[in-house]
Amino acid sequence: MTAPETEPTRDELLAMAYVDGELDEAARVEFDARLRAEPALLREVSELRQFGVIARQVAPPEPMDYEWERLDKEVLYGGSQRLGLFLIALAAAGFALLGVITIWASSLEPVPKFLVGALLLGLSLVFLATLRGRLRTLPHDPYTEVRR
Image 1 (tube, rainbow, N blue to C red):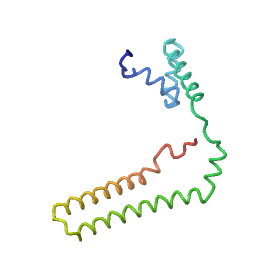
Image 2 (cartoon, helix red, strand yellow):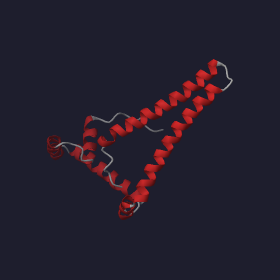
Image 3 (cartoon, rainbow, N blue to C red):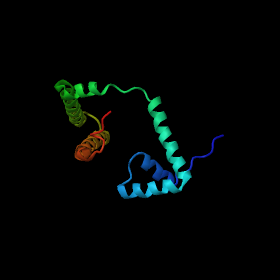
Image 4 (tube, rainbow, N blue to C red):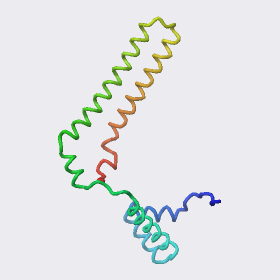
């Protein structure tokens, strides 16, 4: 039987942030000083660094960087992705509108018409809100510049 997982301590979180290079300059200097004075903390940082090395060795090989760069430069690659997303959005909006018109013109009772219409309208609103949110936050996404 394994021991139950516990929340990481503040020192463990700081060690993880230190290894990942996420500490600001003042916090990093303070943590460096603690590493010199606290062998247990130094051991924790060493173990975390070893995990990183092991993870890189176990991970499947990534495509070659030059292949990704070549793909990024191709007009067809980027253009087809943008065109595909546009067509998906257009089809989703068209199907939602077609569904509302079809339900409205059908011989269903008013309550089922309302429920199906509300469902289609709700799905459309969720889709549009998600799309709008993604487009508005895209310039602030820290991972847009991350290279594989």
